[in-house]
Image 1 (cartoon, one colour):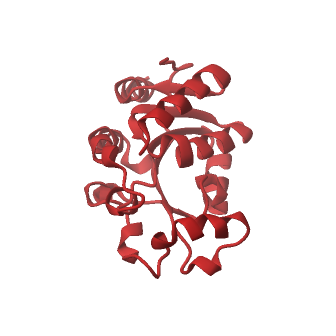
Image 2 (image 1 turned 45 degrees about the horizontal axis):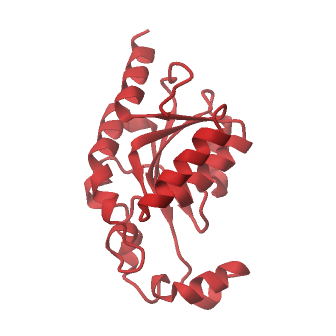
Image 3 (image 1 turned 90 degrees about the horizontal axis):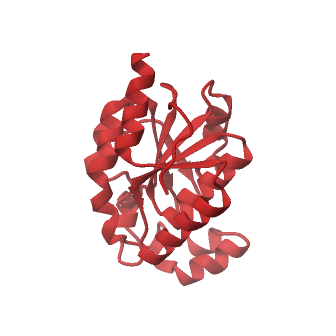
Length: 202
């Protein structure tokens, strides 16, 4: 399943998707495997700290502030609105805060729904986006799909993404591998770092 189409440019953006306490500690949305991907994400951040951005999913203040189909969504997940939970849960997890910069707040799944980050990614000279974080089958996938539409080079860090559903994690990767094989690259953190370092050395 692994593949890289060529060297990764030195200026590639590394987006850490939704590595928030909300997705580790909240009883409704907690992802048990989130902590397991912290070390590989840290390796990417240590290698290229200035390339990092962090997206944060921000729920509405109250359920009735949601619009359209999101209102039905928050009727189900009513305990994750800001008035029903500790607002500090939207923060990036403590282990990654030393590298925290370039915060990308969003109210939907794709980080590219944030206009500022969309401009940053689209206007970057390298137009390359490396994705880590959670969840593979939701916010990571949605961001990857929108990045594809923008014509960006998209790389998923295989051992630095996870989901609350192991089955859906694997299915999402299978679909990406089989259906988007010319537009999404799949690579381990080791492979990404080796390619990045080679690019800088050259």
